Image (cartoon, rainbow, N blue to C red; front, side, top):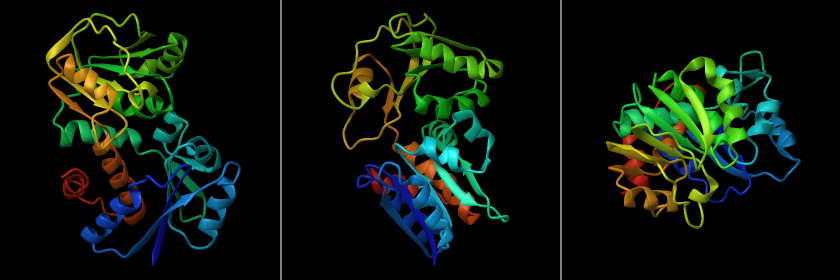
Amino acid sequence: MRRFAVLGNPIEHSKSPEIHRVFAESCRHEIDYQKVLVEAGDFDRVVTEFFASGGIGLNVTAPFKGEAFALAEVHTEDAVDAKAVNTLWRDDEGRVCGHTTDGSGLARDLEVNLGWRLAGANILLLGAGGAMRGILGPLCDRAPASIHVANRTPERAEDLVALFEARGSLTAGSLTAIPDREWSVVINGLSSGWAGDFPDLNIPTISSSASAYDLIYSDKPTPFMTWAAARGFQQVTDGLGMLVEQAADSYHIWNGDRPQTSHVLAMLRP
């Protein structure tokens, strides 16, 4: 049986085994997919032993995506952009290959599942951490009118934008000086979207059909989602669809088939 796993710390909350089990059933594949708690300093050993014992593919979650990038011998362009990897496998030469499916998973959720238009849109990104670096390249590829990155520390936002400035109209600044454009898509990557109160940001103008997306997923509305709904955003959602779509992209890399995702989303969010 083909073996797969997701590595992280913590890992108990992971929905990946359940998602991949349903994917395998729909594709009529037999797989074994486990979640593995990895202690600090033990990542390389766990990966090496997994592949040495015949394992096929690994997903990687926090806090090991950077270590996965460092371990991989071959990187895709998206992995190089993100400097992070969430999908590992070995090629025909036995080399460990690394890719990130986070950006492609997000873009597919926004465009296909939710029907949001990215081409020609003004997109506002809140936060400049690793999650934003992982999604910025695929967002640029959708040809938006502009992307602005706002962060508590504007220098971090400016450094991030500098990496992608040749790929579109990108700007950066602080959370207290968001430009006055007609924002149609706002994507949150701030840690305050996870716990506590979301800061009351001043976004001068939003479009009449503005949409808000939280990169995290939760069984109840996140602080960011509550904030966005109260401020008139027409569509507000969390990142569950991104989780499922990036998993489908990983499954495709490993098994050659990209499973349908609608039934998985319906199962996870009845």
